[in-house]
Amino acid sequence: MQNFDDTKNKILQSAILLFATKGIDSVGVRAICSHAEVATSAVSYHFGSKENLIQQCIKHCFKKINVRITSIDNSFNGTAASFAVKFATTLEEFDNEIRLLFTYFSNGKLSEIAEASSTRELFIESIEKRSFNRHKIAIRAEAFFYAVFNDQLSRIFNLNQTSAQRMEWLQELATTLFNDN
Image 1: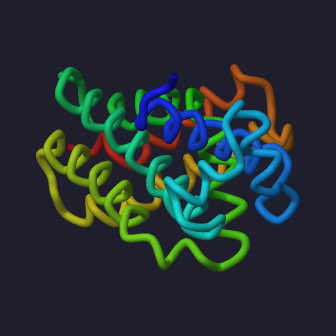
Image 2: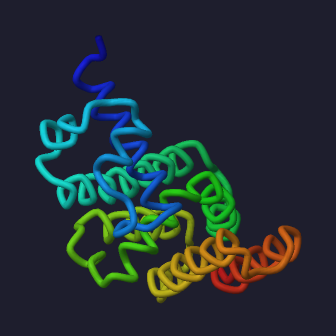
């Protein structure tokens, strides 16, 4: 018999994958439970409703990205520009999460989630710590943050250049924004 946390996590992971690949409105509770190999009643028991499950998925995505940003921040000793590039390349680990966040954002609901601003703030704080010249650094860090997410969406949906061209663009952008310290 599965324990409480295992079942809840299986539902969460299945929902993120299915919402990201098929769309939130196209995936029902039965499909999620079938993929997670749990009883349909488990969603109601653990989350109350599909809407609450969606909210928990979004929060989980941001939490997962925030943990990764914090991990990089704590272990990385490079410049603001090199940290920014490291952050951008690390996001490639989060295709399903970014795809789901994009879908949710497209529906105009992302502003309802407090974790959305915490991810941006974590990144900006990490850049500020590495900058000698803090003049307008937060604005530049925020611009880079949104550019990176836009680039990741383009990559996920196959709308961008080759990987080498993307890396060259990200490094050039990071250098332009952060190397005047």
